[in-house]
Length: 311
Ligand code: BDR
Ligand code: CA
Image 1: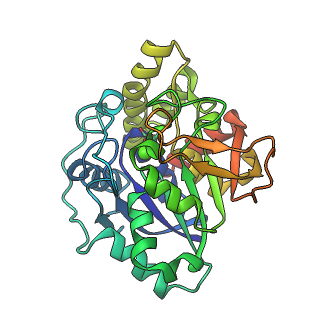
Image 2: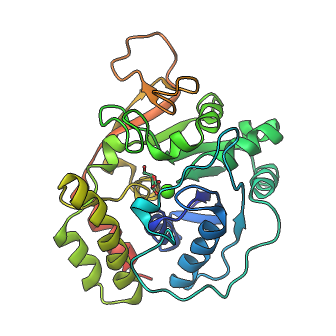
């Protein structure tokens, strides 16, 4: 199993990504879950991460609170998508399990220093503040990261928080810039692929039909989450962005993309946080990321449903 750190701002789709990881111990050893401000403030994201661990009955997972705001900008949140709590939809009890003491950034640094170099994968599902802060504070850890597999950005799909930027990158463009310039192998799940992973009615029914508490909760989460996309865009269902990251670690061949150069806009207010992806390789800038463009959506949902049924 690959050793991973999940960095997250739950978020219904973050929750499903975490559940998929916790259901898949043969593929992923979750060393810790580090929380960041994003969809909702840190106070709620760290609480939601613990709610999700308890839902999965994995109360021994380490959950850390991290940065409560982006590196050099005020926090932008997304209650309009995820609801007031960030995890609106199912009715879940307040968590009993405690946060693990210590700052998420220090956990990331210490873990990378302790583990064998090249054996820890970082899985960011929110703004990249914790990850970039760890790289800034301890540059020696950068070379020790095996891979970064993240959800963020969009190119042909444009943006979902501004016309040109996807939420996770827009919230902390400086942090994203640091990560994309780190030299670490990066796999990017942009909107171009996540907008193909839609929870249609039959897929939502399949979650509910699992017949477990987890299946029910996931169906309720995606029901809530999808109202936004359905009402606003008339789409067939909610895009399940973040689970693309953990599904990739189980079955990479569900996904296809290109090794290309990706740069982050950090200056222009108009296009702040844009992921400028050299998809057609019109520059000679070296590729720094595997930019995913397509997914076998049926295969993805089959995998997800099968794994969630284990919890
Ligand atoms: C990303 O932003 C958040 O709202 C979701 O959790 C996902 O990580 C999609 O743009
Ligand atoms: Ca997220």
